[in-house]
Length: 223
View 1: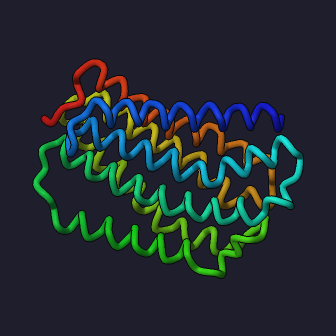
View 2: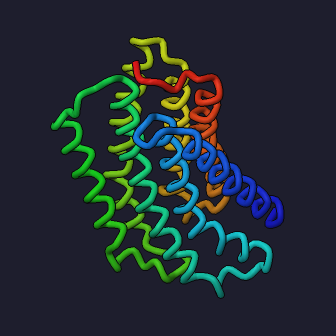
């Protein structure tokens, strides 16, 4: 199982980073393609801080020796995932030709700021393998609220404009949170629940793949 998970993590990182670099290279700076590439690159780069130590731990069967790297890697991932959703919000604006909406931007900014601050707090006990159960919930409340807001915006516009690419992206985000929330709430008591992180990771990979496919089909444009 350890070898399988390590192989899965390597596949995920190589796929996300590789596809993202291709989109950055093929997209004009500031275009939807470019933003998709940047979003995916930040996703992959941030996840690598946690997954590389995890891969090493899986292959050596030694998590205790890598506890600090795993913990602080998870902290970095918490922050870069927040940036991921800020970029996805910007992509939503561009895709739908939306002029900056101050209220939505302020809401996303506040939620992101609270999430980052909570993630940086020492009470998270990042250097310990178990971390803090309570603070794991605290820092994920604003994150879940960002996800709810993004899903609502994506699906509302996708349905109105019959935008299949962004409809799929919205569904992928729903799947990611449907898998992630039980891990946050129950994995400490029922370790088997942690297996949901694999479909959660696949959901994020699919977001990048949807963007890449749309680029190849030349449909990743502003409405």
